[in-house]
Amino acid sequence: MSGSRAVRNLAVAVSLLPLLAACGTASDSADGGTASAGGGKTAAGSSGQLDVPADASADIKEDYLIQNALASCMKKQGFLYTPVVPVDPADSWTTGGADYELTRKYRQKYGFGIYADIVYPDDPQARGGAVSLDDVADTANGEYVASLSAAQKAAYDKAMGVPGREAKATGVLPAGCHRSATEEVYGSASTREIGARTTARDKANGQALNGDPKLVALAQSYASCLRGHGIPVTTTQPTDIHEMVKLQALRAAPLGADSGDLNADGTPAETIGKDEALPLLTRDVRLATQDLECGREFRAAYFPKFFKAPTSGGGGAG
Image (cartoon, rainbow, N blue to C red):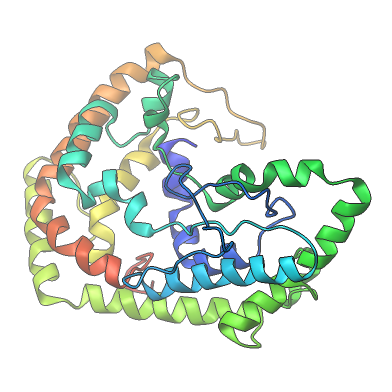
């Protein structure tokens, strides 16, 4: 996945983390294998259950509990399920400003990551290195699913209670392990109700960050520095300013900078070539570096608070 597509999906991903864990697909089965969101580490011990980190945020703890409940339920149904280590938001921000030194090294070569995968097509770091929960589940559990016969696969899907179109429309999961795991962790609430809770918590976290006096003052200094470099400032809200310049760069990118870009008629746009991308990357590196230095003090104060109470931003609305 290119950097631009990852950023476009960020707000949705943050707000739906608990539901992504609860509403997987039939590929979420197990072979007793090992994988994690951090890149292939062991997911579960010999008990088949994940150890829930004591210092994990409320969202992440719920994700762990959902995964363990799925494994336990599927075992009772006669199937294997290897629980997948949930994605920690902190991991996805390591080179996104949370760790200054790692971000500096990343941006000096890849900029914001908008054009890097075109210039360095064989470099996995150029794509941002983000691993989705679905990707991890496929790696951990794909072999087991592939070993099932058609009849076994159908029985597996029924036992899991794979959410379909009706579940998305009504917010009610079909009978099966997805539903029982969700009810075990959240109570007898529909996915819509769970989503509403998540949205409310996200909004509260965003309002707290945007009302923090220290962050507000540092955001103003950050903005002044950007203006000094001739970089437009469209917001000084703490939850938005740390990604503002990157999002501006993404919006200014030419059609074809991302492999997922579409033409006006909905057809896939032709990806720009390396020769065209190289000068754009050079400019992107300069812009990303200026942004990082201007926001260094702000990010050092912002991210520790953000990780304790994450939000997708959006003007303080979460």
